[in-house]
Amino acid sequence: MKKKIRINLRLFEGEGGGAAAGSAAGSAAGAEGTAAQAQQPAGPTGTESQNQTDPAAEKSPEERMEEYRRFKKDFKDLYSRDVENHINHRFKETEQLRKQVDEYGPLMTMLSSKYGLEKPDTKTLLEAIEKDNSFWSEAAMEAGMSVDQFKQMKHFEAEHKQLIESARRAEQIRQREQVWERWNQEADACAQKFPGFDMDAELNNQSFVRLLGAGLDVESAYKAAHFDELAKGIATQTEQNTKKKVTDSIKAGSGRPVENGIGSGGANKTRTSAWDLSKEEFARYMERVRSGETIQSFD
Image (cartoon, rainbow, N blue to C red; front, side, top):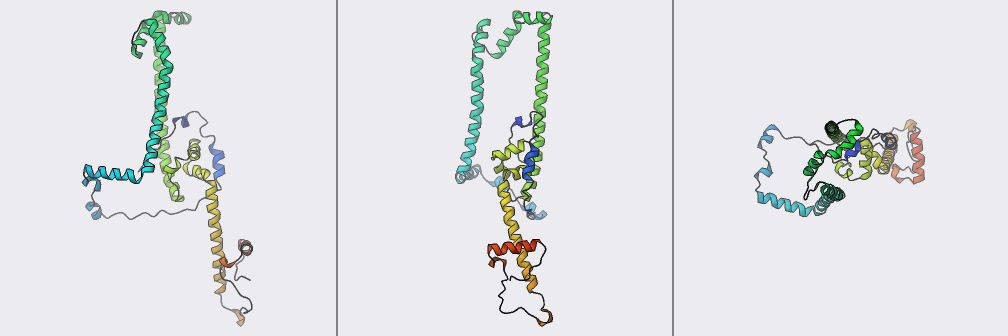
């Protein structure tokens, strides 16, 4: 199921949007995660699929409303946070519009007074300006045109500007749809490689979102945003794998037959588990294993 991701359209403005991708990707290159194969549940057989029905279709409106109320109660903190975020976003947009209207107020009042309009709206004010040849005469004279010719030229310029703006918005929408599709695919692949990855949670991470906006793919942005955590996990996994390798090597050596009837002396007590070693002893054995030596016993 595809998910829609809310992004800032300014991410696609200009030609330098992806310039930061190279440096950020470089810092993420060393943090390779441990691959994990996702377990895919077996789907129902044809008969089972036919016998299944949609539970929501059988519920009454009252039952659905009760479930919705229970959902809001069980997830009150998450629900309240989402509602608050939406309200804050709406309030911010409304506040910006109100500020713009307040700034246009004095201009509207001045023009309305000039043209004798008591309760003007944008349409009537534009019509009044259109009919006022004195408004256009000086500019028309400087351009070497009649007033009508100058008006027509300005109309063409305005239409051309609107067409360019419409094309720009259409291109932004097209790019946004492509980015959504790519991010959805990359998020699925990243979740396969990093079981702890959650795209919805990461979209609340400003560092992750900023890296995506700079042009990084989802996996590189996740690695860069969580470099320390991933590096620590890799180090822990490497240490565990090395300990297992040492232990397996000891077990393999102790299982070999005794040659020429010579066995190990009883005076030397051999430890068969790497977990019995001290930190310093374990470090020495790890160096020997890395050099290719097969450890048969702990001296």
